[in-house]
Image (cartoon, rainbow, N blue to C red; front, top):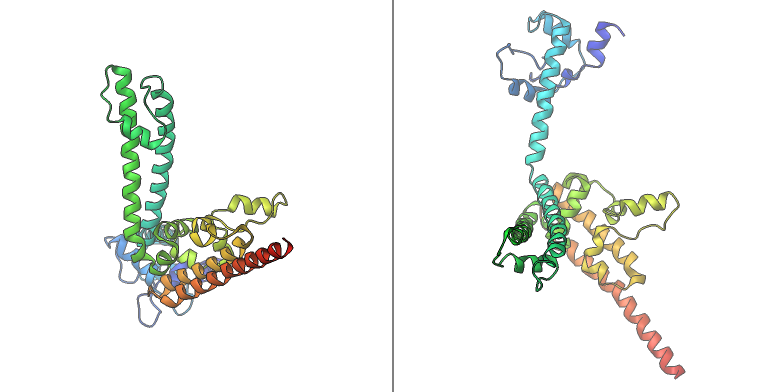
Length: 311
C-alpha cells in the first residue's frame, strides 16, 4: 500500500470534518495550542462527504510538518475522543444503575460471608450468639470484656454496616430504576430491572437483545453446558425471581418465562428509544399470564373430576 493509499483508504479523520460541505479535515484551523478536547470533539462528531488524503492536506495546510507527525497527532486526538466517549457512557444513568446493583450484590455477598465468620468465632465467645446477619447485628450491641471480644464485636459491627450499605443501595436502585427504565422497572421490579440491565451491559445493549436471550440472562453457565451437550436447555435465568415465573407451576414455567422475556425485551426497547411508559405492555403481559395460569386451573379441575368419578 502506498502512502497515498494509506491516507485515503484507512484514515478515520475523513469522518471528522467540521465544514458544512464536508471537505475540510478535522484539523482545519487547529494549532498546537488548541484544546485537545476540542479536537477530540471534532473527530467524534464530524463527518466528511468522501475519503481524501488527509495526511497530505494537513501537511499542505501546515498543521503538521510531516505525515508521521500527522499520525502522531491523530493518535493523541482519537485517544482523547475515546476517553471522552467512555466517560460519557460511564456517567449515563443506566451505567450508574449497573454500578449500584453490582455494588449491592458485592455488599450482600461480603456481609453474608463475614456473618458466617462472625458466627463461627462468636460461638466460642458469646454462647447466646446466633448465625446470620441478624445474629451479627445483635452481637454488635454486646459489651466486650477483653481484646478478643472486642475483635468479634467489631467484626459484627462491620457486618451490620455493610448490610446497611446494601439496603441503602437497594433503596437507591428503587428510586433510580423507574427514571432510567420506567416500563422495565414497572414490569420486572426495580432490582430485577437493574440486574437485567447490568447483565446485558447497559439499557441499549438489553434493548437490542432478542427475547430468547433476555430469557436466559444470568444462566450462561447452564446455557454453555447445554450447548456442550452436558445439560438440558435452561428455561430461564435471573427472571426466575419474578413472581410470574417463580409462582407458576413447574410444568408451565417455560411458557411463563417466554411470555415474560418477550414483554421485558419490548419494555427495554420502549425505554431505550422513547422512554415513555406504556400501560398496554403491562396489560398484555397480565393477560398472557392469566391465560397460562388458567390452563393449570383447568387441568387441575379436570383431574379432580376424573379422580372424583373414579371414586
